[in-house]
Image 1: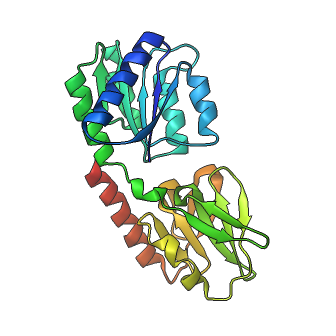
Image 2: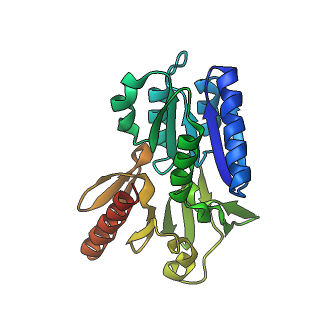
Length: 245
């Protein structure tokens, strides 16, 4: 399901934006979970546990302004859509450092907002709501692929490193790692970069000839034999992202 967060320190503005979004969802026959936040710290705290597909952020807020909030969101999720809504047009240039989909000036024109919501939602891949069941030694754990930083094959088990820092170990794998990991590779943002590693390209921060550096400083090796194929696949992924902007 589509997940939307609205953050504005003015309760009346928050209520109005909620009303507009509800009207939009009803008009287009969409369902979504919409959460309101009157303080950016509350939203940042929520991001420790969960992320949203779409953020509507005021810019002028106490303690943490919308620009800083957008940068924090990008640390958690590079794919989320961000819409800035503010009374201050002078921040527009600075706002684009977090690649928002639009920058709307209050009072918000409802039709302009609806057009922006349509564009934002068209760029959101809700298919990742499909989950992956990982059998561990004593249970079954259900994961969202977007929560996986990388997966490593080690001592006949799969070690999943999650975006929150948790490590999850599968039960002993009887088949080859290549066969075991096929369901994850159905997602276009996962890449086999080594016979024992599959990486989530969404969280790559640095690309070297022998390794990827991921969010949090995690380093995943790149096989020398696979370097050209890995380089080309990662380049194709980046180009596809650019075309979606």
